[in-house]
Length: 441
Image (cartoon, rainbow, N blue to C red):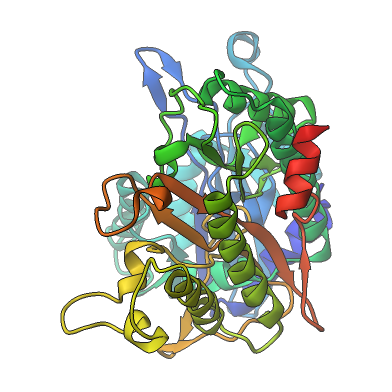
């Protein structure tokens, strides 16, 4: 769990970057209808959660930096309502929220529209997540318009800033508390992958392995998956975001599982590929080892100062040279990794996605990948995925039949440290011998 003192420090970090005499407003997520009068299980807005840890809908956080640089943190949230709580669950309420969440003050959310007009009056600048929600934009602009209409003794903000520029940079570097939560999420997710490997058998269905995974998540306290789980047997693994998970698993084929839990708001994101019946064929092993070698080569390069594009090129070179050695590609490494006129590099028909992305509260977490149009150097506290893949679909006719219908991806979650990196997901087996030994046992 993240201590409330850390949420307070995050708000203070945002306030420190705001201009004097300004206001910042951040809205919670809204409940979303699934069908008729039922809703999806609630998931908080990531930026709102990062600054508050408050996990209810219909809320707003207002940060104020006065002209003398004094600050306030104000929460607007649902009022206590006995009848509503009988039907739909307990509410924290403004009075308790003020104390629990280290706030200057808290009010019922029904007062937001009126109070926002007063709070904006006299401010020169306002920050919010511009364009994220039409309703939220309208709330801000309506309040600004109301200030303007108050007459010559009122003064509305004239400077508008996108809050993402501040908060997303803060979210990019993880604290020790965040890393502890992410390690636990990774541990639970590793256990789920191990369980799926042990459970796998020809004749089972993809959704049955998915059920094993989701049960393991929930049983260990991570009630939600961080994203829709991918359980792709055989040629289905060549569909990068396959989520139907409805086909029968067949002996002699591989199954690719891309699944991670969400724990206390933080995501894990792991992919493992293994044989349905526990033993790799010769061709499967050759391609699998190639992907594993590419991942390890990229991992060996990760340290402060490295860039994702440079690490990606390392993995691309290993995979491409391996495909040449196996006769799947012809020509030189340079010929197969460079664009030919308007055509993409030859390797991209088999490895068509990126190597890495940020990981945190969101699976594809926030933060700029380039600074001043240059690749961003990695720094300690960044968390990334490392996920090379190789996909040879059944309908690729320029490849020998023995290679077709095989999709492989291996994905780990790593933290950049002062001296290199730490692998959060190393507990999930990924070498051929470790997978076969686990599944045989």
